[in-house]
Amino acid sequence: MTRVLTPQAARIHEIDALRGFALAGILVANIGFFADPGYAVAGSMPIPGGPVAYAVSALVLTKFYILFSFLFGYSFTLQMRAAERAGASVRARTVRRCLGLFAIGLAQGLLLWVGDILTLYAVLGLILLALRGIRPRTAVIVAMVVIGVLTLLWLALAVLSGLEGGAGAAAAPDPAEASRIMALATGGPLDVLRMQLELYPPLAAAIWLFQGPTALAMFLLGLAAGRTRLLEEPERWAHLLGRVQWAGFGVGLPGGVLFALTQGSNGPAELLGLAVNTVTSPLLTAAYVATLLRVVRRFPAVGRSLAPAGRMAASNYLGQSVLACLVFTGYGLALAGRLAPVAVMGVAAALYTVLLLLSAWWLRSHRYGPVEYGLRRLTNWT
Image (cartoon, one colour):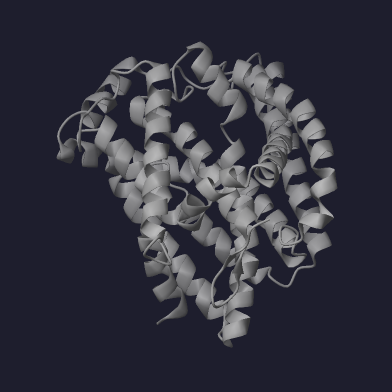
């Protein structure tokens, strides 16, 4: 496959393409909130009801942040190697980078996207720094234990909820509160800012609690893969991609369907769906990765179209929030609540296409994206 070279080291084309692909899934997963901010209050599927909602839940939700977390762990090993080549301190560089990510995530959470995950990644990055000496085999085992424990916890909660007759079910959402949030989202810029300040702290706490353990497990798997240079040596895994697809789709798709069908039921069935989804989402994500790698190997143009966005992943992640705010909130057109689910997916496709084109254009004359440039300056302290 094609490698994109820089004076310091070879860029890994597969990682850039996978990041670009992950950004598409993250946009689809997140845009439902912008289109219907009452979701943050109602706690239902990001796009209310219908086939689009079930498709997003079954095929997208939780699958792509898993991929992004894996790639974060893999990239950590690349940054360690870069620091070693430069004779710099891995610890100092990582701490500075994590502080930068935390600041960016905090700003985005307060101003643009209340579901921001960068603050969580910054803290988990420091944990990964402390674990950087872990053996790859041990990292894989720990990651599997984390996933297994989470699955068992959801199963235990499902059993307890069933024994109590659903006594632990979540309270029904308040339509008046959801309407108030929608009014803030589609009001003026100050109304949008008020909504962000109200919703971000509790949602950030929920993200840390519910996504943090899985993200840490994926960080560890990425660390193990990076330490063994898995994605840098395609000959080691190319012959296994078909098997990964069969296993991933064969187990992951039914798990995703169960998750979609039980989501929002507020009882043992929903908890069971969460348990199944916890263990099957990584398998479905692995099937997506295997499929994309096979497509890129056969049609290199696909990888070349995705790679620029992947090289500017942080800039694109923030860019998604900026563009979605301009379309759906009072920062711009205030279209929240006015578009059908299919139209929302159309907006997602349009925004992703714009970002792909902007990324390719930007990298014709720059080596790094604007956010990446700032993080690099801070990380290297130059």
